[in-house]
Length: 463
Ligand code: ARG
Image (tube, rainbow, N blue to C red; front, side, top):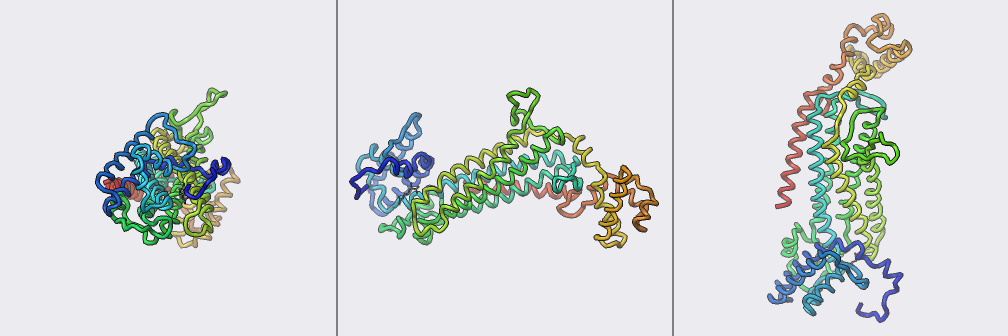
């Protein structure tokens, strides 16, 4: 570097060198350099012939880096310097003109924004695919009953389709979060220079349009120091990974012999090296366990950016590994979710037997009392007494005698036995968003429309 006479100490170099991870920016850096070169041509810094040679050179660099066995040099500090060196090998001193009106600070910010755009879009696509599977399974199991849980204790029966759609809506919100990250990464920092802007009036709007950015940054200081778009992606990915971990966790529990609610396809399970009978839900366990890692990436970058004086600090080079790791992790998890859900088998009898527990109808009885004018809190107490009576005699609620009922409340007549009929527990949930089959049908319609909108938005953004 310009003023230096000494080589960097190898200990410092190892810490400073970002090439071991930022090589992943190569394709974005080359695209960006091509657009920047066109911007330089438009203001006469390059002539037509120079631009043509530079574009051809950049394409040769792209091809060389794609070659099997391609190796960088130890002296290459980062991907930007490496590409410039390789371009020099291809087109000679002309390569030195490419860095006119650009700093590595706005260059790297632009590359990273391009990564976030591409992978936000990919995440939306993968969320859409997983939502499609959830919807398919929900439709196929719209009238299968299962116990719903709170505190992992049986609470109220629901339809399996209703339970599966809960995950559909979580992912639908994740799509919105990834869309937010995509929008925030659609502001081009290039042109901010090191921090103050550059001395060349490159048409930033034209370069942005060339690169697929919707806007250009309004302030060069903000442009070179902003990494909010990475944080937005990491926040979206953390929440999405948390959702998948809850799904994974339920599948682990449900596939145990104790529950026996579902079984994963062999292609998403593993055996044991010692116990031949085992079929383990490893895919679901890993969905469960990967989530804190994504959240940690978010925390890491928040920590890096915390209290960092404007504008660029080398600290910001630490944005990449958390981002790349989160991208790999969330994309793998979403792909597994989709695959795992396509081959999962549910056990109708097991789920139904578990949801037939009459105690689950306790709220139904309380509501019956409420309809007779008893305040809900009081009704809750009466039913609590009935539950205790039944447990004490080791019999189901429906076998309490009319006398026993009247001892607890004058309002308990034959309707008591009617609300204890299983079929009524779910169908009584007719409220919008409830598990009853009418609101569930409406919910399925909504879900289909939401999924279609995700697909349409993807097509727009790809176009
Ligand atoms: N490798 C650096 C990074 O990832 C590129 C920017 C270097 N800028 C600088 N002023 N040293 O952040």
